[in-house]
Image (cartoon, rainbow, N blue to C red; front, side):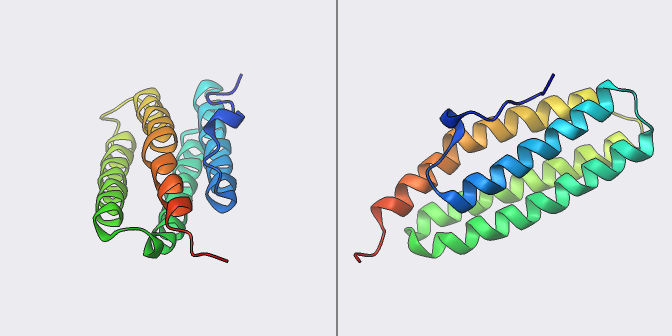
Length: 135
């Protein structure tokens, strides 16, 4: 069973962002499967590394779109991205050192991704639509 099921309610309406979110969900589901299946620690670390790398890419893509939103909106969203990256890297280190159970990391990532998609990214998408240049 998947950790997160992609549903239309998660769509922001921005095709590029939504496509990237589906990839993040798929990677998180693979991490979940690896942890639940008791796969080798190395496998879990590789998937977690992939998730971190793809998150960097996703954030860069979103931040490129933020040129079309008010500076205060972009600044707040970018700060949210940096906080998450800092937290994930800290959790990743703790997980590798055996200081945190992978399930705790997984729960954090799930909670964050769902909140990010349904909160800040939906707000960003609405702002992008509102500030769309006339055709």
